[in-house]
Image (cartoon, rainbow, N blue to C red; front, side, top):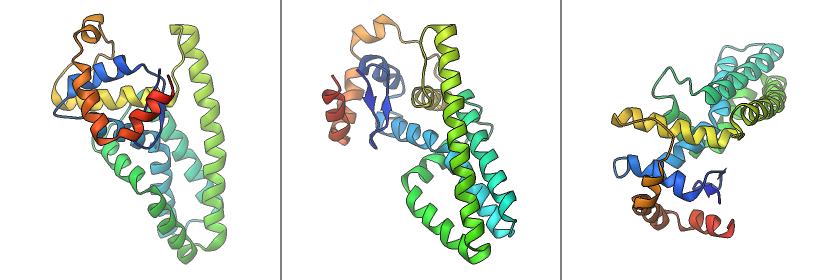
Length: 213
């Protein structure tokens, strides 16, 4: 049975295992904050593309360079999320805030694009993103197949971002970042407190979990 983030992102990890991990962080970091960070990490490639597009617009870069730069940075974002290679510690938090207001940011970026580089520059930005998105899907498919061959199970970016989010906060709190959940953790039921706290804050997400049973 999968879990869902507040925004509806599906994570194919059982409720018991997912909330047993999050119970280690609770109450310093609740499930709401961790799962919103998962949403941010899921949007991390878009966040990097946004920053790249903004820089290109301000410096009036030509359309071809805008498309190439945006596409490359999107792919870099995909690879960073796969390997959890966040050199700058604040990046997951910035991505989370971007994710919450992504539509506003994108509209503002489009408006600035028309001012600085015209419609061709804006079009180039979106072409670069679309091509990179398709390439990112191929990378994700390849990585899932490789994991399934090596580990017997293939995780998508959603599950990997869940683990990345856990490790991010675990390192902040100075606790183990091992993502392996023991039988004792599940049986002890400590995860229920974290689950009930999340249910109070986001009943709609819990309803999705129940419907997925």
